[in-house]
Length: 349
Ligand code: ATP
Ligand code: MG
Ligand code: FE
Image 1 (cartoon, rainbow, N blue to C red):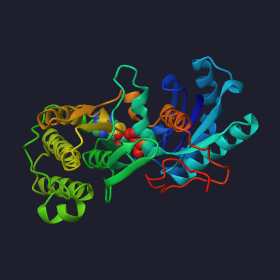
Image 2 (cartoon, helix red, strand yellow; image 1 turned 30 degrees about the horizontal axis):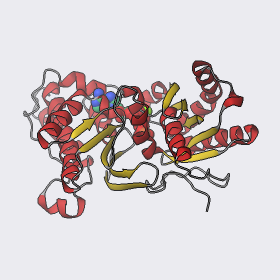
Image 3 (cartoon, rainbow, N blue to C red; image 1 turned 180 degrees about the horizontal axis):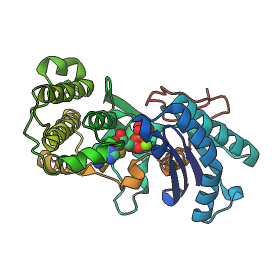
Protein backbone atom coordinates (compact mmCIF):
# COMPACT_ATOMS: atom_id res chain seq x y z
CA UNK A 1 0.00 0.00 0.00
CA UNK A 2 1.01 3.60 -0.66
CA UNK A 3 0.84 5.36 2.73
CA UNK A 4 1.36 8.98 3.71
CA UNK A 5 2.42 9.43 7.36
CA UNK A 6 2.13 12.57 9.47
CA UNK A 7 4.23 13.08 12.61
CA UNK A 8 3.83 16.14 14.86
CA UNK A 9 4.38 14.84 18.41
CA UNK A 10 7.27 17.13 19.30
CA UNK A 11 9.20 19.77 17.38
CA UNK A 12 9.54 17.96 14.02
CA UNK A 13 6.86 18.23 11.35
CA UNK A 14 7.50 14.97 9.53
CA UNK A 15 5.77 13.84 6.36
CA UNK A 16 6.79 10.48 4.96
CA UNK A 17 5.57 8.38 2.08
CA UNK A 18 6.18 4.64 1.81
CA UNK A 19 5.08 1.93 -0.57
CA UNK A 20 4.92 -1.19 1.55
CA UNK A 21 8.41 -1.45 3.05
CA UNK A 22 10.00 0.94 0.58
CA UNK A 23 10.76 4.51 1.55
CA UNK A 24 9.72 7.01 -1.12
CA UNK A 25 10.16 10.30 0.74
CA UNK A 26 10.77 11.66 4.21
CA UNK A 27 10.56 15.43 4.66
CA UNK A 28 11.32 16.89 8.06
CA UNK A 29 10.82 20.52 9.11
CA UNK A 30 12.08 21.25 12.62
CA UNK A 31 11.25 24.20 14.85
CA UNK A 32 14.29 23.41 17.00
CA UNK A 33 15.94 26.77 16.32
CA UNK A 34 12.90 28.59 17.69
CA UNK A 35 13.19 26.66 20.97
CA UNK A 36 16.91 27.29 21.38
CA UNK A 37 16.56 30.50 23.39
CA UNK A 38 14.27 28.73 25.88
CA UNK A 39 16.65 25.78 26.31
CA UNK A 40 13.94 23.24 25.48
CA UNK A 41 10.85 22.63 23.35
CA UNK A 42 8.01 25.12 24.02
CA UNK A 43 4.69 23.37 23.24
CA UNK A 44 2.78 26.39 21.89
CA UNK A 45 5.68 27.37 19.66
CA UNK A 46 5.91 23.80 18.33
CA UNK A 47 2.16 23.64 17.61
CA UNK A 48 2.15 26.88 15.66
CA UNK A 49 5.21 25.77 13.68
CA UNK A 50 3.45 22.50 12.75
CA UNK A 51 0.47 24.45 11.47
CA UNK A 52 2.70 26.50 9.22
CA UNK A 53 4.89 23.63 8.04
CA UNK A 54 2.27 20.94 7.32
CA UNK A 55 0.92 22.04 3.94
CA UNK A 56 4.29 22.79 2.30
CA UNK A 57 5.78 19.61 3.82
CA UNK A 58 2.99 17.45 2.36
CA UNK A 59 3.54 18.99 -1.03
CA UNK A 60 7.28 18.51 -0.82
CA UNK A 61 6.90 14.86 0.23
CA UNK A 62 4.51 14.13 -2.64
CA UNK A 63 6.84 15.79 -5.14
CA UNK A 64 9.87 13.92 -3.84
CA UNK A 65 8.03 10.59 -3.94
CA UNK A 66 6.69 11.51 -7.36
CA UNK A 67 3.13 10.51 -6.48
CA UNK A 68 -0.17 12.39 -6.54
CA UNK A 69 -2.34 12.86 -3.48
CA UNK A 70 -5.11 10.90 -5.22
CA UNK A 71 -2.81 7.84 -5.46
CA UNK A 72 -2.46 7.50 -1.67
CA UNK A 73 -4.10 4.32 -0.31
CA UNK A 74 -4.11 5.32 3.36
CA UNK A 75 -3.22 8.17 5.71
CA UNK A 76 -1.30 7.55 8.95
CA UNK A 77 -0.80 9.89 11.88
CA UNK A 78 0.81 9.91 15.33
CA UNK A 79 -1.97 9.88 17.91
CA UNK A 80 0.45 9.90 20.88
CA UNK A 81 2.39 9.93 23.08
CA UNK A 82 3.76 13.47 22.77
CA UNK A 83 2.87 17.10 23.35
CA UNK A 84 -0.94 17.41 23.27
CA UNK A 85 -1.11 20.68 21.35
CA UNK A 86 1.47 19.54 18.82
CA UNK A 87 -0.23 16.17 18.28
CA UNK A 88 -3.61 17.85 17.72
CA UNK A 89 -2.32 19.73 14.69
CA UNK A 90 -1.24 16.53 12.96
CA UNK A 91 -4.38 14.63 13.97
CA UNK A 92 -6.64 17.40 12.61
CA UNK A 93 -4.74 17.52 9.33
CA UNK A 94 -4.79 13.72 8.95
CA UNK A 95 -8.52 13.49 9.54
CA UNK A 96 -9.21 16.24 7.01
CA UNK A 97 -6.98 14.54 4.46
CA UNK A 98 -8.48 11.07 4.96
CA UNK A 99 -12.06 12.36 4.79
CA UNK A 100 -11.49 14.42 1.67
CA UNK A 101 -9.61 11.59 -0.09
CA UNK A 102 -12.11 9.00 1.21
CA UNK A 103 -9.21 6.83 2.34
CA UNK A 104 -8.65 4.81 5.53
CA UNK A 105 -6.89 6.49 8.42
CA UNK A 106 -4.48 4.80 10.84
CA UNK A 107 -3.81 6.56 14.16
CA UNK A 108 -0.60 5.03 15.47
CA UNK A 109 1.70 4.99 18.48
CA UNK A 110 4.77 7.20 18.18
CA UNK A 111 7.07 4.87 20.13
CA UNK A 112 6.15 1.85 18.04
CA UNK A 113 6.70 4.08 15.00
CA UNK A 114 10.32 4.52 16.13
CA UNK A 115 10.69 0.74 16.00
CA UNK A 116 9.00 0.53 12.58
CA UNK A 117 11.59 2.98 11.22
CA UNK A 118 14.06 0.10 11.04
CA UNK A 119 11.99 -1.57 8.29
CA UNK A 120 12.87 1.29 5.93
CA UNK A 121 16.62 0.75 6.27
CA UNK A 122 17.23 -0.66 2.79
CA UNK A 123 20.79 -1.71 3.60
CA UNK A 124 19.89 -4.02 6.46
CA UNK A 125 18.46 -7.52 6.57
CA UNK A 126 14.86 -7.61 7.84
CA UNK A 127 14.72 -7.34 11.64
CA UNK A 128 13.85 -10.56 13.45
CA UNK A 129 11.56 -10.76 16.45
CA UNK A 130 11.50 -10.78 19.39
CA UNK A 131 13.81 -7.82 19.82
CA UNK A 132 14.58 -5.45 22.66
CA UNK A 133 14.40 -1.77 21.66
CA UNK A 134 15.97 1.19 23.42
CA UNK A 135 14.43 4.54 22.41
CA UNK A 136 16.30 7.61 23.60
CA UNK A 137 15.42 11.17 22.64
CA UNK A 138 14.62 14.57 24.10
CA UNK A 139 11.17 13.36 25.09
CA UNK A 140 11.53 9.68 25.88
CA UNK A 141 13.81 7.01 27.32
CA UNK A 142 12.06 3.69 26.94
CA UNK A 143 13.08 0.07 26.95
CA UNK A 144 10.66 -2.11 25.01
CA UNK A 145 10.24 -5.80 24.30
CA UNK A 146 8.85 -6.26 20.78
CA UNK A 147 7.51 -9.73 20.10
CA UNK A 148 5.49 -8.63 17.08
CA UNK A 149 5.53 -5.10 15.69
CA UNK A 150 1.81 -4.91 14.94
CA UNK A 151 0.39 -6.88 17.85
CA UNK A 152 2.73 -7.38 20.80
CA UNK A 153 4.89 -4.61 22.23
CA UNK A 154 5.62 -4.44 25.94
CA UNK A 155 7.08 -1.53 27.93
CA UNK A 156 9.83 -2.95 30.15
CA UNK A 157 10.93 0.34 31.62
CA UNK A 158 11.13 4.07 31.09
CA UNK A 159 12.50 7.18 32.70
CA UNK A 160 11.04 8.21 36.03
CA UNK A 161 11.96 11.86 35.46
CA UNK A 162 14.06 13.47 32.68
CA UNK A 163 14.58 11.84 29.29
CA UNK A 164 18.20 11.13 28.33
CA UNK A 165 18.28 13.90 25.69
CA UNK A 166 16.72 16.30 28.17
CA UNK A 167 19.52 15.48 30.62
CA UNK A 168 22.08 16.35 27.92
CA UNK A 169 20.25 19.63 27.30
CA UNK A 170 20.06 20.55 31.01
CA UNK A 171 23.69 19.68 31.79
CA UNK A 172 24.85 21.60 28.71
CA UNK A 173 22.94 24.59 30.00
CA UNK A 174 24.58 24.50 33.40
CA UNK A 175 27.98 24.24 31.72
CA UNK A 176 27.11 27.36 29.72
CA UNK A 177 26.73 25.48 26.42
CA UNK A 178 23.86 26.24 23.96
CA UNK A 179 20.80 24.13 23.06
CA UNK A 180 20.54 21.39 21.88
CA UNK A 181 22.98 20.06 24.44
CA UNK A 182 23.79 16.63 23.01
CA UNK A 183 26.15 17.70 20.22
CA UNK A 184 27.67 20.38 22.50
CA UNK A 185 28.47 17.91 25.28
CA UNK A 186 29.89 15.53 22.68
CA UNK A 187 32.24 18.21 21.38
CA UNK A 188 33.26 19.33 24.88
CA UNK A 189 33.89 15.69 25.89
CA UNK A 190 36.43 15.11 23.11
CA UNK A 191 39.40 16.15 25.25
CA UNK A 192 37.92 14.95 28.54
CA UNK A 193 38.52 11.90 30.72
CA UNK A 194 35.33 9.82 31.12
CA UNK A 195 36.70 8.41 34.39
CA UNK A 196 37.61 11.79 35.90
CA UNK A 197 34.45 12.13 38.01
CA UNK A 198 32.39 9.15 39.25
CA UNK A 199 28.90 10.55 38.57
CA UNK A 200 25.97 8.39 39.77
CA UNK A 201 24.27 5.77 37.58
CA UNK A 202 20.56 6.28 38.29
CA UNK A 203 18.46 3.37 39.62
CA UNK A 204 21.42 0.99 39.43
CA UNK A 205 21.93 0.11 43.09
CA UNK A 206 20.88 -3.37 44.18
CA UNK A 207 18.09 -1.83 46.28
CA UNK A 208 16.68 0.03 43.23
CA UNK A 209 17.06 -2.85 40.83
CA UNK A 210 14.33 -4.96 42.41
CA UNK A 211 11.52 -2.54 41.48
CA UNK A 212 13.26 -0.59 38.70
CA UNK A 213 15.47 -3.04 36.86
CA UNK A 214 14.65 -1.49 33.47
CA UNK A 215 13.72 2.03 34.55
CA UNK A 216 15.92 5.10 34.22
CA UNK A 217 16.43 8.27 36.24
CA UNK A 218 18.57 11.19 35.14
CA UNK A 219 17.54 14.01 37.46
CA UNK A 220 19.87 12.83 40.25
CA UNK A 221 22.74 12.78 37.78
CA UNK A 222 21.92 16.31 36.65
CA UNK A 223 21.84 17.48 40.28
CA UNK A 224 25.15 15.73 40.98
CA UNK A 225 26.76 17.54 38.04
CA UNK A 226 25.30 20.88 39.20
CA UNK A 227 26.59 20.36 42.74
CA UNK A 228 30.06 19.32 41.55
CA UNK A 229 30.31 22.42 39.34
CA UNK A 230 29.05 24.73 42.13
CA UNK A 231 31.55 23.35 44.64
CA UNK A 232 34.42 23.95 42.25
CA UNK A 233 33.25 27.46 41.50
CA UNK A 234 32.78 28.23 45.21
CA UNK A 235 36.34 27.08 45.86
CA UNK A 236 37.53 29.49 43.18
CA UNK A 237 38.67 26.65 40.92
CA UNK A 238 38.26 26.56 37.19
CA UNK A 239 35.65 24.01 36.07
CA UNK A 240 37.23 21.33 33.85
CA UNK A 241 34.37 21.37 31.32
CA UNK A 242 35.85 18.60 29.16
CA UNK A 243 36.15 16.19 32.11
CA UNK A 244 32.67 17.03 33.40
CA UNK A 245 31.17 16.54 29.93
CA UNK A 246 33.00 13.25 29.33
CA UNK A 247 32.17 11.87 32.79
CA UNK A 248 28.52 12.89 32.52
CA UNK A 249 28.18 11.35 29.07
CA UNK A 250 29.80 8.14 30.30
CA UNK A 251 27.31 7.89 33.17
CA UNK A 252 24.35 8.24 30.77
CA UNK A 253 25.76 5.82 28.20
CA UNK A 254 26.75 3.26 30.83
CA UNK A 255 23.33 3.06 32.42
CA UNK A 256 21.48 2.99 29.07
CA UNK A 257 23.57 0.17 27.64
CA UNK A 258 23.75 -1.82 30.88
CA UNK A 259 19.98 -1.87 31.35
CA UNK A 260 19.27 -2.61 27.68
CA UNK A 261 21.67 -5.58 27.71
CA UNK A 262 20.23 -6.77 31.04
CA UNK A 263 16.85 -6.96 29.30
CA UNK A 264 18.35 -8.90 26.39
CA UNK A 265 19.86 -11.40 28.81
CA UNK A 266 16.82 -11.71 31.09
CA UNK A 267 14.46 -12.35 28.16
CA UNK A 268 17.02 -14.34 26.20
CA UNK A 269 16.72 -12.02 23.20
CA UNK A 270 19.98 -11.68 21.24
CA UNK A 271 18.86 -8.50 19.42
CA UNK A 272 18.86 -4.86 20.45
CA UNK A 273 17.44 -2.06 18.28
CA UNK A 274 18.39 1.54 19.02
CA UNK A 275 16.26 4.58 18.12
CA UNK A 276 15.69 8.26 18.96
CA UNK A 277 17.77 11.40 18.46
CA UNK A 278 20.29 10.62 21.23
CA UNK A 279 21.56 7.79 18.99
CA UNK A 280 23.48 10.61 17.29
CA UNK A 281 25.86 10.16 20.22
CA UNK A 282 28.86 8.26 18.90
CA UNK A 283 29.96 7.15 22.36
CA UNK A 284 26.53 5.57 22.92
CA UNK A 285 26.70 3.74 19.60
CA UNK A 286 30.26 2.56 20.21
CA UNK A 287 29.62 1.28 23.73
CA UNK A 288 26.40 -0.45 22.67
CA UNK A 289 28.15 -2.19 19.75
CA UNK A 290 31.18 -3.18 21.86
CA UNK A 291 29.33 -4.50 24.87
CA UNK A 292 26.64 -6.01 22.66
CA UNK A 293 29.26 -8.01 20.83
CA UNK A 294 30.76 -9.42 24.02
CA UNK A 295 27.26 -10.29 25.26
CA UNK A 296 26.35 -12.04 22.00
CA UNK A 297 23.73 -9.41 21.17
CA UNK A 298 23.38 -7.99 17.66
CA UNK A 299 22.91 -4.23 17.91
CA UNK A 300 20.94 -2.51 15.12
CA UNK A 301 21.29 1.20 14.52
CA UNK A 302 19.20 2.62 11.65
CA UNK A 303 20.46 5.74 9.86
CA UNK A 304 19.99 8.89 11.96
CA UNK A 305 17.40 10.35 9.56
CA UNK A 306 15.15 7.44 10.53
CA UNK A 307 16.08 7.56 14.25
CA UNK A 308 14.93 11.12 14.89
CA UNK A 309 11.22 11.93 14.70
CA UNK A 310 9.92 11.52 11.15
CA UNK A 311 6.76 10.79 9.18
CA UNK A 312 8.14 7.81 7.26
CA UNK A 313 8.23 5.66 10.39
CA UNK A 314 4.56 6.46 11.01
CA UNK A 315 3.70 5.52 7.42
CA UNK A 316 5.82 2.35 7.73
CA UNK A 317 3.95 1.22 10.85
CA UNK A 318 0.59 1.82 9.17
CA UNK A 319 1.73 -0.12 6.10
CA UNK A 320 2.62 -3.08 8.36
CA UNK A 321 -0.79 -2.83 10.06
CA UNK A 322 -2.52 -2.86 6.67
CA UNK A 323 -0.43 -5.76 5.37
CA UNK A 324 -1.25 -7.81 8.47
CA UNK A 325 -4.97 -7.14 8.14
CA UNK A 326 -5.65 -4.60 10.89
CA UNK A 327 -8.74 -2.39 10.66
CA UNK A 328 -8.28 1.37 10.23
CA UNK A 329 -9.09 3.79 13.06
CA UNK A 330 -12.46 5.49 13.14
CA UNK A 331 -12.57 9.30 13.27
CA UNK A 332 -13.45 9.13 16.98
CA UNK A 333 -9.83 9.21 18.16
CA UNK A 334 -8.01 12.31 19.33
CA UNK A 335 -4.53 13.28 20.42
CA UNK A 336 -3.49 11.19 23.43
CA UNK A 337 -0.37 12.59 25.09
CA UNK A 338 0.02 9.44 27.23
CA UNK A 339 -1.02 6.74 24.74
CA UNK A 340 0.36 3.47 26.20
CA UNK A 341 2.77 1.48 24.04
CA UNK A 342 0.44 -1.53 24.13
CA UNK A 343 -1.94 0.53 22.00
CA UNK A 344 0.02 0.14 18.77
CA UNK A 345 -2.77 1.77 16.82
CA UNK A 346 -6.06 3.25 17.92
CA UNK A 347 -8.33 0.43 16.83
CA UNK A 348 -12.09 0.76 16.34
CA UNK A 349 -13.86 -0.39 19.51
P1 ATP B 1 10.88 12.86 20.74
O1 ATP B 1 11.26 12.79 22.16
O2 ATP B 1 9.42 13.11 20.51
O3 ATP B 1 11.36 11.68 19.94
P2 ATP B 1 12.71 15.10 20.44
O4 ATP B 1 12.61 16.17 19.43
O5 ATP B 1 12.68 15.50 21.85
O6 ATP B 1 11.58 14.08 20.07
P3 ATP B 1 14.90 14.08 18.94
O7 ATP B 1 14.67 15.16 17.93
O8 ATP B 1 14.80 12.67 18.49
O9 ATP B 1 14.02 14.25 20.22
O10 ATP B 1 16.34 14.29 19.58
C1 ATP B 1 16.71 15.52 20.17
C2 ATP B 1 17.47 15.21 21.44
O11 ATP B 1 18.64 14.45 21.12
C3 ATP B 1 17.94 16.47 22.16
O12 ATP B 1 17.66 16.35 23.53
C4 ATP B 1 19.44 16.48 21.88
O13 ATP B 1 20.21 17.09 22.91
C5 ATP B 1 19.75 15.01 21.80
N1 ATP B 1 20.97 14.78 21.00
C6 ATP B 1 21.21 15.16 19.73
N2 ATP B 1 22.48 14.85 19.37
C7 ATP B 1 23.04 14.24 20.46
C8 ATP B 1 24.31 13.70 20.76
N3 ATP B 1 25.30 13.73 19.88
N4 ATP B 1 24.51 13.17 21.99
C9 ATP B 1 23.52 13.15 22.91
N5 ATP B 1 22.30 13.66 22.71
C10 ATP B 1 22.06 14.19 21.50
MG1 MG C 1 13.27 16.88 17.92
FE1 FE D 1 10.28 10.42 19.08
